[in-house]
Image (cartoon, rainbow, N blue to C red; front, top):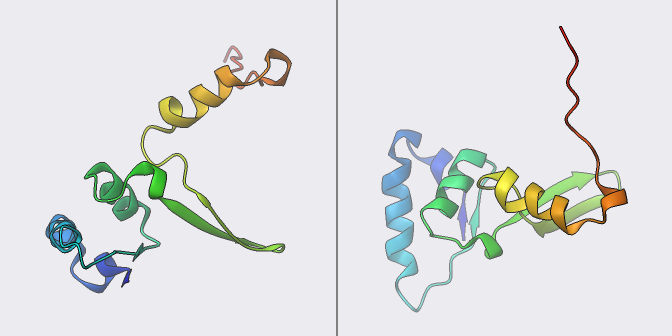
Length: 103
């Protein structure tokens, strides 16, 4: 388990940290669980293919309690998430979110 490793070390070396995590992950005896609150580090881990998009989760806390859900919006939220959801929705469920007013 790696807990906020980017914040525990010099953040300028985040790519070296990611490379180190990749090397550890190549060894079959290790299974990595990487925890972070640093969204930039989270996106970089995903973009470097250290953790596949389908295995990224985000925790959120509300009055109802703690929720762990599959992450969305990690990379290009418009193409990967919103566009797909927009075209998968029934026409009456779509929301026109673009409204232009003259200035």
